[in-house]
Image 1 (cartoon, rainbow, N blue to C red):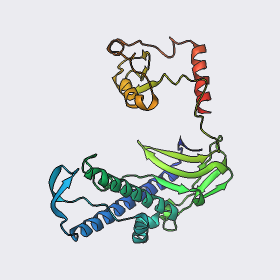
Image 2: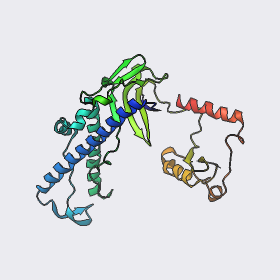
Image 3: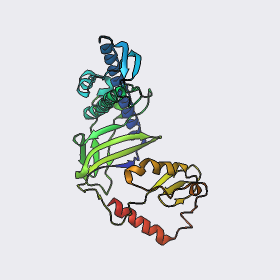
Length: 297
């Protein structure tokens, strides 16, 4: 089964400078691809007959303006048009291709929303939007672009990399991951940190039914600012400020088949409070931890 395991990266200053440069180039390449897409799409639209006219939406709503068309730009077209782009060349070839594929997927999502718009199911969609100039975007390496050596993966490096940024780039493989499981690695910037997303296939199949779990019950958790954590279950509530946790349960109640009848106004206004480190017995916490690992095994 494919799964993604995020690990916070511990880069040296030299490695961090390299990855900042790579992520900035990925961000700029995305913007170049979006600019190409928008320009081509609008130029094509202007040539269509009656593109600016009166049209029907959902057969009962008459509108006037530019009609909404699907975008014809695809990933292969983007790859061919931007292959000589300086940001493309600054990345490893396969990483640049993965970056453009992400734009292609966004275009596909937009096209699917065009049909839904004319059926009256969604508001008017827009083409992919530009990212913040100078920002950072994730850089992805498929398995073919990674070299396994001495317990580390070495990603491909572009020949166009700035000389002052060239250093030995290694991504240490976590001890619990077998090198044969790795299918893809992504360097992802998030909130001032770098994360390494290991996409693996360990051959294990997901457990559809765990006999140790009661599927009629569920917990919804909302991370608080001062109270650390708020949780709501199908029969009782823990901690304080439960609105967020209750809303989380409400969103998935139908999908999971959870009965929310016992989540009443009284429980939300006067919830039970527990200190996880003093009120709950150690044996209870260890039992919960054991069940958690059985569920994810």
